[in-house]
Image 1: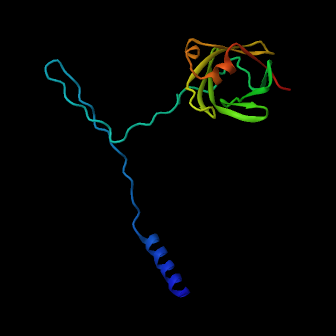
Image 2: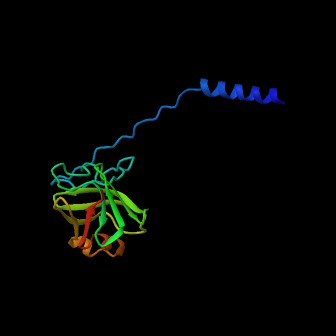
Image 3: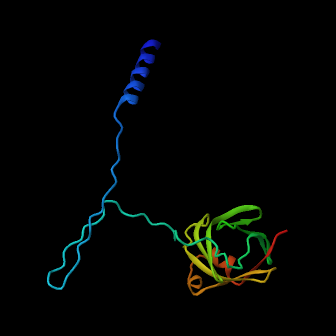
Length: 167
């Protein structure tokens, strides 16, 4: 019986190795029709593959001219609330030593944008906040957009809240 299975395995592998390779073709996009003043508009053809959306792929996580600090920061009013901001545009929030949320961010001038978020349910992103950093204190304020945010967790961490670096 073992010989049968070894033979079957060898034949299967041989057929797989010797079978012709499948060549994937690249989808083509037909040119779109244009409307002229002398003819009626014509229908446009759609691409055979839909483009995929990415979260602002061309913008860098942190503006190099920005004064946004990186590292670990503790809330001055709640020693258990700690944020980590990485130079690579990643952030994480820890409460009492446990990671409660994280994601990606980017900075433009004095505006901090959370562009992705995990761990807090259904809080909307992107969401913006203004910040100031005087070398010691990192302070967040709500923007017009974030004032309308229904997510109480985000508002609690960024509404007139000050953080200081963790040694």
